[in-house]
Image (tube, rainbow over the protein chains, first blue to last red):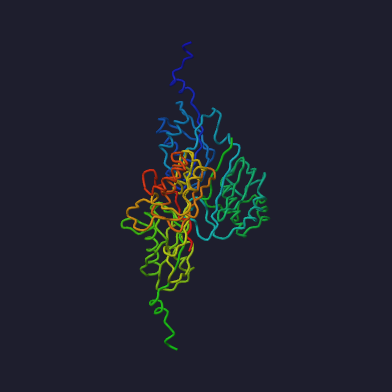
Length: 260
Length: 260
């Protein structure tokens, strides 16, 4: 019947198509992921490029924010377009228009109920420390320089104290503003050493604001001998954010992977 | 006796002190190592900083040149100063004045006959390839992007053809200008794969101009299936530089270590 034959344009306008993208970025030149006034962000750059490519005004939803200077190897985001695109065409078009510090790794069609933040089951972050007297100049934007030799064994013992379900109020930057629960479950928190590089890998179903950098800041203090694993347990139990938990610098951090 | 007691200034002025430094640099912003007019180079930056620190006009001698955009994890250089410095003081002073993309890793006193280039026994270079559809944005200045999947096994077979003492005239950029012999001995040439990263490691007592990038350029062609290991043997035997041997881009290359 004639009413079942829709012009592509008409069909598109009545129900938009949802797309899911995986994005890697060098966060050095951006004021983080989320759009904000007067500073360029990764989300804003992606929205600009997507608008210029598609001719549509698009809002992009990320799996979560990353702070200024933080990188991503596998940020995931979704957006809706009225036009139906072949994912490879959208993929090539985006990378052709994006600057070299933002790369789209994958583009896929997504179901209408897929939501990059709300559908996420688990996230992994990696934090890279260059532990040596002099910083490697080629890693200065991608690792945090810690001069004092770190004791990785004691960092591993302290990390062990944080794995599992706990109230992480002592590990978030502004607990007063948070209405929701500060209980989170850390699935794994590993510390590995390869020469002067120390990599902290942490995964959870969800993280509080600045939680990863707070954990890494404290683990660095532990590695320096300033805090013991027993004190880490006490700080966790206190549920109180104090100066004993520093926020580690952003350049060492990367949002590694999001699971759905 | 009074004539044996020299004022420090007098002694210094009559015979300068030689220093040996190990330097790492991110070559992205430099027109290579060697001083040249109208472009900033690593050598020039080091000479400027050393002059401003010591008050002496100093020429720095590197173990060899690196091209524009090439990095170093372990370049070695020497220079003479009339003043006697404690190496740690010189080390701290240099790093305090140098930009973050040049770092002095070590400073040591050297004998008067030590020469960074002429005394070098062996050098190792590493060439890093990012072999994936989309470039990792955080490696864009430190690895060469090769999109087509590379066959590492066949690259290793081709590398094997080049190990040992050969005439490498086919692997240098301007053999006509070279008066000296183009015979060199490659001690090892290894190709390793770790996920999307492929690392070529090559060591020799000495390299010809653009020899490492020519070898890597050909190995990439081999990995893409455009050249066979047998053809590599023929190209080597031809001693003729042709377009079949491309010069691989500079960003993947780093001068890794110099032995004395």
